Image (cartoon, rainbow, N blue to C red; front, side):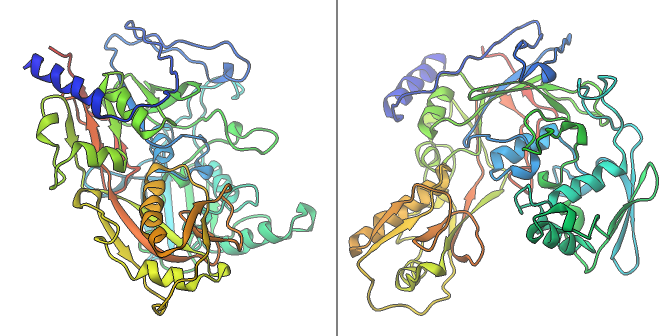
Length: 476
């Protein structure tokens, strides 16, 4: 059996894409002591944990984790890290059901417009030198009030704000923050619908019903963090302080090291440490996994899906002794947007009039939905169309598939040099004002792991990950 596995792995090295790999130094200490760095920028987050039962797991994330600030996250790779470092008022369990988290209970008014949350009295932030005592303080309702006010600030993206427009006074506060640039000229100082009744009670009043409100509060964009973690210059959070099951122990190049929080308020059995390699090319990340440097790949990319699965989406027989494939039946939604300002309606109508077969999307890759909102054009303008820049491997895969087919019509599609959508840009994979949805791709979220690793669970949403009960067996 071992000989067979070795042969398969050798075959892998021949068929995987070769390329220049990013050098990653992974410090491993079997005693369970996390290494520290004595740089000024990381001194405040340097921590050491020693446990008798030390377990570590090394995972790969497809997308670069560029931020540890919940309000600046854009990818599921970032959101998964947020869900480990931070908590929200609510959480989603492995069955997809809303459960208490920082809030231990809540009541909802008869008209479904008033939510009263009672916070737990045993939830504390991770210990950090930015707290006066150096020890993590208790979470209070005022922290959450400030978090929501920051969501509506001009200093952060609108991603979180778009989730909570139903809160009374949120839109007014957000609008003034957006359009009144001089703080002294603003007259709205708070969000009317959010208030702290006392040291343990938070009240949220909605202007309109929102059946998904409790679910939205579980999203990583609604993570709870203290004001002490915000840099004095108002830039994004660099050294995070959360309440989660893990805290940031180290950050270097393409590696994040998370250590388990022994004082976590919920009972969980998780690995002592998680090493997260991110920001590599899909082929290089796969090669690291195939060589045994990583225990699991979370949300494998489209090229990897094509390589390791058969026509039914199951793990190809040639990899069965070397890998395990977990399908949580969760999709990552990738959208392709049209920019009406570009005036390229003929190309838009041509693209949305196609189907999966046209783009050669095999079954394991998931399903494409075409949103045809424009009359079909008899002819295409012979011109160059630009797609706003993206590094997301799945988005690049979709853009390449479209470009390959369109090129035969005489239209050239190229990737723009900027993320920004100007009138010259025809398409984008990132939402922008006035965007018209052209294609939605529901790509399956698949976890590829060593056969010795089990128990990593993703449920309902691609960011809702759990390592509770993960087993890491030694290879024979």
